[in-house]
Image (cartoon, rainbow, N blue to C red):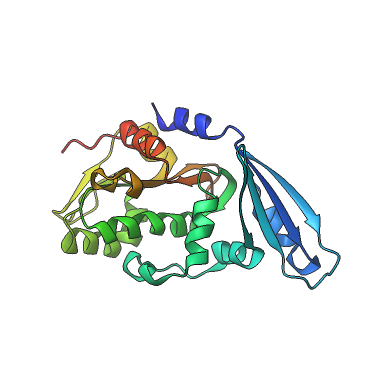
Amino acid sequence: MTLEALFEEVDRPRKEFVVYTGASDADVVERFAARNADVEHRTLPDEDAEGFLVVRERGGFAGALPVAELRRLFEAAILDPWDLENVDEDHRALFDLLDGTVFASLDRRRMLAASREVEEHAWRVGAGTLCAGFQTAAAFGKQRRVYERLADETALDIHAYAGTVPDDAHAGIAFHTEPASVVEGFWFVAFDGCGDDARKCAVVGRQRHAETYAGFWTYDPGTVQAVFDAVPTGR
């Protein structure tokens, strides 16, 4: 399966979001636009009330979280993978609830935040295969410090995808410039869990405009495996 085909499969409606907000939180609804979920906005009678998100799946109620956590998703500082081990449970619960949601418009900052979640899983396990598509060598250069530390301090098998191989490429990172359809059009980070399905995770973004992506993250083992099947890892 190609990444294009994977996107089409994941893009089918699977969830329903109901965002309850006061007047001060109304802007979060637009930023929360999703392609494969029905998003409903309901205004709370108390304009100063703390908003919250309710997520429903085919099996019924999936969970609820404060709108404040949604704001953190869009606005929080970008941490290094080794600094994410101490994030609170609400943050992790948010990523779990939004698993498989195809957001219509993610900027580079939000794509990077989601990528950090995958990198943190890989850092914590310290072994297995980590694949990351950067599109350009310049984009890899901005994350080079992170990936060189992952290569130096773990036993991860790291594969990076970009249009060209950067100068002074790290010996612990395997670089790929093909296939062009994968390298040029997608931002992705995938971790194979080192053989443990419970640890598999991935984020995939398909570029829409110069600075925005339609993107999703997932902990579903089959979807993560589909990402690996779509990209070459042979050295």
